[in-house]
Image (cartoon, one colour):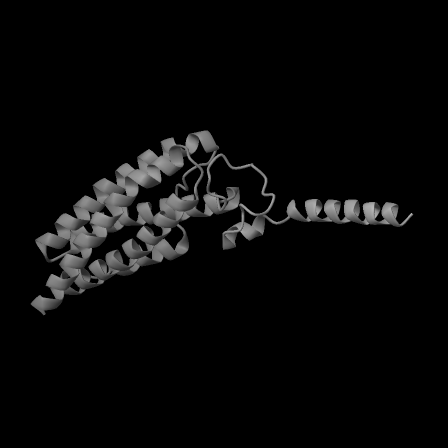
Length: 197
């Protein structure tokens, strides 16, 4: 009788542990995924892969950022005083236009679409900078580009680490070096504009 009770308690404890492990995917974020029974839903070794909502949020932000950079690039070519700033704007229009086109292709397998219009925050930035010209525009535009590209690089590095393999992740990996280059160039121009004042 005593042995039967021990056996029943052991089985109950084992079942309790096994059922508890099915709900411990959150342990992955602290690096314990290998010790617990994490499900094999992910084809990568990375157990922190983004879900569909997180992917959509990233895509929406990346698309809106690219659309804004294209539009601001056009404004820079028209409103900037410095040839360097106008050239940077032209590069933004081309590179982010290309990135937007490539993003559309990368999203087809996921059944996601690129937003076709800017949200209010991004549109407000364009409208505000469009009211400026000359040195004031140059400074404010380049400051905006440095700030935006710092955030973009962080977001894309996060995406590179957390997206499942596929066309979207390849797009991120191909776009990230371009964003880093933009950031470096914007910072260089920013420094030069400060030194010229």
